[in-house]
Length: 114
Image 1 (cartoon, rainbow, N blue to C red):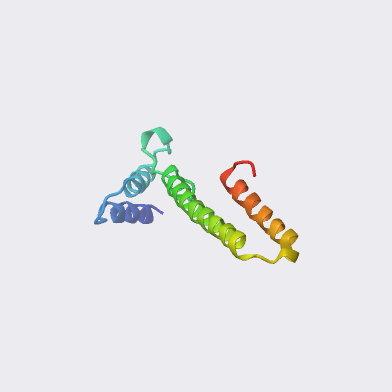
Image 2 (cartoon, helix red, strand yellow):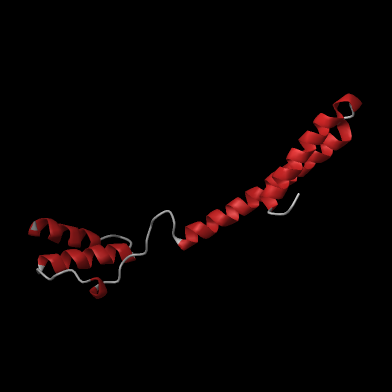
């Protein structure tokens, strides 16, 4: 066990790029080799690399916001096309229903009332 911990610390120390995570691994392994108990306050923990870090969530929000604008534009264009080109008098109720559905989808996406 001691040899494995020493190897982990050495590999982390000799890494080409020193990151917070590698320094943390090195310190944890060194402390374990010396038999010191783990204390969270003694070592600065690495930043979370999970899927919900603030930076990742901000990028995801920006992406979804951009995508939402594109969808709104496409829905508006479809609504205009249907309003201009669907000229069958006997299908007026169908056209009205489709337009109402599109308006509702746009309103739901934008958060405004239809």
